[in-house]
Image 1 (cartoon, rainbow, N blue to C red):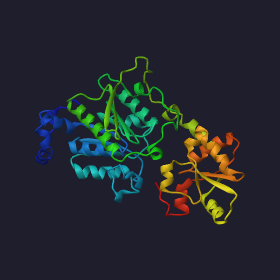
Image 2: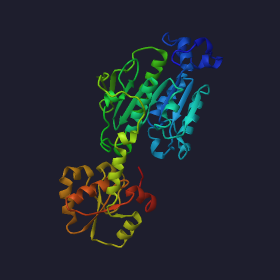
Image 3: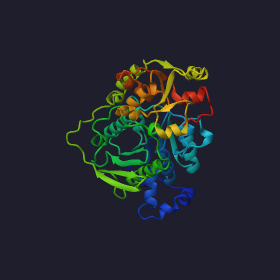
Image 4: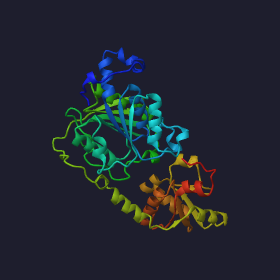
Length: 389
């Protein structure tokens, strides 16, 4: 309700005290604070981006917040997902987020949707809310929520992060562009690494999430100039902000209905290729441990992770040849030199990259065995002193 009947909205005495620094801002004032109380925002994802933006939307006095997520809190989340705490590890993220929001602002209505948002439920979930905020980390859900916002004619506040860089903008607002104007087609699956694969600076999503919260608040208040039509690019290493102009594409496809976004982004095809890769010979980490303990010298244990990952944890006796080197060709020659008649056993963090490396090596005439579950399984099943990351 971006144009609410403000006569029906009242603040109690505690709210006057709580929002006093807003009330003395002419751009907010009593009318603006009532607008915030009347507003409803749907946040898809309670991860790195969702954490700060939920905290600040609640603190600002947004009256109704919907949260969509089906994940549980993991130790690896705590480096950047500041809405969650150690005591919530293993518990649903949406419950953790609601608990923290109500600690900040007990006057906020918090709706929980512990589900995987998809074409079948997205419209029903998003319909009651004024603004959609995209805090997701995958292309199918980004396209889905973009199309939902277009079909429902709702602003979509977008953010994304990777390593040391972030982006933010506002889609589908006052005739401005939408996500399909920025990315008409999704990249091939696996082309863009996830944060789990490439890493992310812990404070980066705090910056981008706060920008998303700011944009949502400005839309609710009707104040300032939003990022609609502008893509904000942030580089934390350089501490620089740049802007790119975005315009609606006059020949973009008309969005008339929701589609199969997994299919659109090539996920089933990628899974089929992955299944083909998984037909490679495999061994478990316990089998590898027995082989190492036997003193066998007829194999080379190849680690295809990145050098910084190798510094974190290693399986004893492994030799590092990163996957990018194998993909570029130089690593293939190095592997041939290392083998010298020995058999090849390869591993990575969880098994995916080593399977890909073995596929490339197979084309070069080098057969190998993949370690199922990688060094993560080694830590879980063989040697708990090896750090998990």
